[in-house]
Amino acid sequence: MPSNYSLPPFRIKMVEPIRLISSQERSQKMIEAGYNPFALLSEDVFIDLLTDSGTGAMSHFQWAALMMGDEAYAGSASYFRLERVVKEITGYGFVMPAHQGRGAEQVVIPQLVRHPGMVFISNMHFDTTRAHVELAGAHAVDTACPECLDLPHFHPFKGNFDLSKLEKAILDYGRENVAGIILTVTNNAVGGQPVSMENIKKVCEIAHRFQIKTIIDGARYAENAFFIQQREPGYQNRSIMEIVREMFDYADVFLMSAKKDGLVNIGGLIAIKEDRELFQKCQTYIVPMEGFPTYGGLAGRDMDALAVGLKEALDIDYLRYRIDEVRYLGDRLREAGIPIQYPTGGHAVFVDCGAMCPQIPYDEFPAVAVSNELYLEGGIRAVEIGSLLMGRDPETRKNRKSDMELMRLTIPRRTYTLQHLDYVAECLKKVYDRRQEIRGLEFTYEAPVLRHFTSRFRPKN
Ligand code: PLI
Image 1 (tube, rainbow, N blue to C red):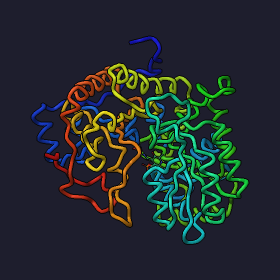
Image 2: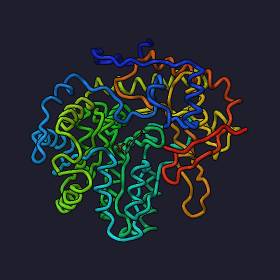
Image 3: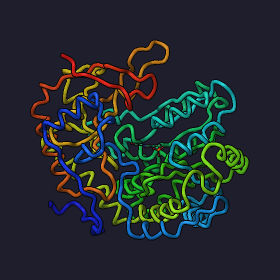
Image 4: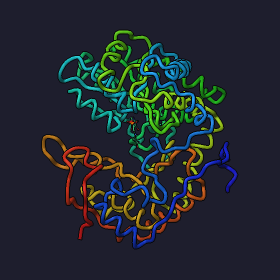
């Protein structure tokens, strides 16, 4: 292994067998799945890079903590252990668990929508966040910085907001119509790209000037903090904990899918800095949606595992290894000439399938087609972040065209070795060599909402 990648700061004491089924079987499974990787069975997948969400490995400290779970319906001791850790990390006054990120979203987002026609503005809404904004009767507006669209060229913080676009959006919609500003850190949809502290600070300054609440969608906030430490002038000698605290100091609310940087298989969090009224509204609302406010849809043992995982994810040795394993895969692909979002993000390598297969139009979903080839080649499952995910325009019913047609190779935490990633790179190289033969897809069934999950396809002739 080249020496400029960090070694894993752990050894393995439990393994889960995986199996590569034959090439003929994979072809058959692909047909049965209607050419949609979401419909493949886990047992038919060799290396699963669909998501980093809830797919990581827990430490022995977390497994031990599970045994301490207090399963009381109300006032569980596990809740108070979790609350202590979240308060320590965020400095916020109020904490509630939720069953996962979208559970936190469904509780908080409707409380911020005061009248019809409101908007949320984000660097980029994640798809469930967008769905909850729309379910609450509001619109989602994205103001990502233009650098994120320049895939081959380095920029340290491609996850940033475009600050002038943000201010313009506030003025255009009117501050009384902006329900909140959502900072997605890291910015998943544009490649797991980080947001700089300077950008976070300026976004929050603008928001406070207009008296708008700021919400950190912080599924991968620890990975973001690591990038700040490595890339942003003035942060090299600051600890990850100090960086994280500064970030939370600027904002008002923290929503988290704990399935990422919480290092657990299920879980979510709501933390509110000081708005007691908002907290009380959420407390009332969470009961019918997620559960009593001291468990929010989680078992006591889940909360204990999360309390430990949150601290482990802030460990500098862990983060260095984590970001390096993703970079390792990105570097292997770039060496082979495969176009990716560069630099590599925190949780995944995003392959530019628009550039790789220009013969496939956007509405024949190039990144789904490449993902399917990768499964056929090596039993590897990836996910499309592109025009299939974008869905149709609700008014014209036309396919929305994504700015980028990306295949996300998402790396679960502490799960695969670099040998696995070498294998992924080898398989993708073979797919890349035959890229001109890859055909687009057409629907045989199109699901009416969130179509990427359940639609079915056939290859175009
Ligand atoms: O999958 P949930 O409900 O725990 O979390 C929703 C969610 C919210 N925000 C962000 C930035 C996410 O990335 C996110 C979930 N992401 C998934 C499932 C993913 O595969 O990226």
